[in-house]
Image (cartoon, rainbow, N blue to C red; front, side, top):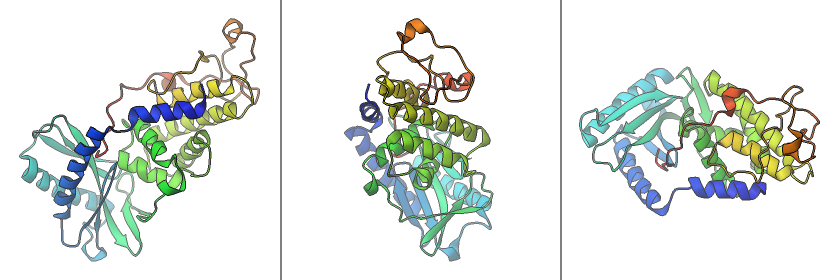
Length: 306
């Protein structure tokens, strides 16, 4: 299978439908109004991944990023109670420098989650909490990369899908702004993203290890895609499917005997190879750690608002 075709087919699976976009738009409008009530001068920036609540410098919540997260969590909880009634219809938790708002019932057709990140304006930039509320980091709210690369929105959707159980969607979107290149093939962009994101310190150590494994898989996929081998694109799709999960299109053949970089690993089955060498383009073989081969949890429908 062609690599670009595989990416396009996968994006068609995870892209929200028109009905889902309408539901999301209603949630965005409702949450924006709710969050604007958190304080005088508050500005709310929304995206497909969540909301950034921007406070003017003179009205910064708390005396540090951890205090800011706690204060915003309490303020959001008050607004949720006013709009949705008392819990257990909803919960708030702290995760990856955001307040995760989970709406379990309250008349909704199904549960959904929304991430809210506090920020303090500092000139043209924003200061937002680090992963554990341990200090601040700067982001540029004016940064808009979608117009620089036609595949950028789809790649962010892919990254949010991949990290749905381990990285807050809003955190992943901000990592993409910082680490996802816009002038590269999609496999090369994934390799460079995971390599750069693993070095930022903005994710948990266990997730950082997974980022490094993803970077190795993407590097192998990119090498096969560019190898000139007649089966190179199909083998590249195999490694991309190992990265993304079973929702990613299948290659035309089973290439599970092909190694992932390095010097050690299983011997390929000659019969399955049909006489074709299954060494990597660099001539190496290696085994993928079993913990990362296991299929991920069943996917949840992509929710543009959370």
